[in-house]
Image (tube, rainbow, N blue to C red; front, top):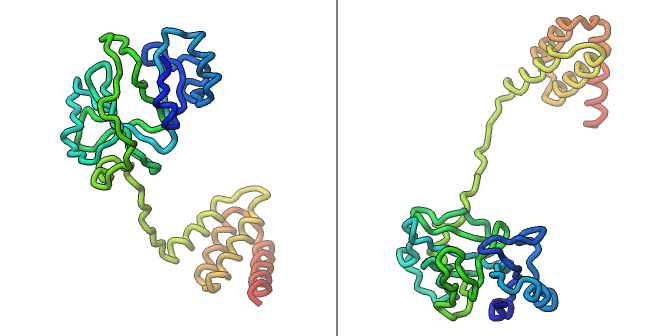
Length: 238
């Protein structure tokens, strides 16, 4: 049976074998086009139906694994479906990134339209033979703010890294020291440019010179690289 009420709520749906989306593309092939859905219903008359809607997430209660939506103290009424296994699907509107499970509440998963789908009411559970049915017929409510700390994905906050001038300068010297072959001139010139940009301290210029000599680059070529780098930096800065 086509879950017409879910279509009316803006869900895209597709046929399922049990709980598995079997058409090419999986749930990505779900559609809201009624002529396509009617054709699928004629072709697969005994299929269940799965659905997704952008901006809608589902808290999926699995009592077999200790799930209990009541423990979340949800006070706002929202569309809720009793599943064929005895659990519940509570539907909410939310666009932000979410974790896969509700924090500190085992047995309550989070399903989003980006990563999966839910079995629609009117379908039959493949193991129990029980119907999925609407338990609370209410508009889909925004996800309560008090649940956000439990469901939002952890955010990575990069820590600022402070690199001392000496450490950065040592990186220039190391780069020159590891140069080989025909790339030695270009790397030496590049390192001298960076050194002049940083003030042209004599100890750093001498360190780059020594590192370059260690690679076998002739001193006259090192001098040429240094003079060219100094002219370049002065010209750009002028």
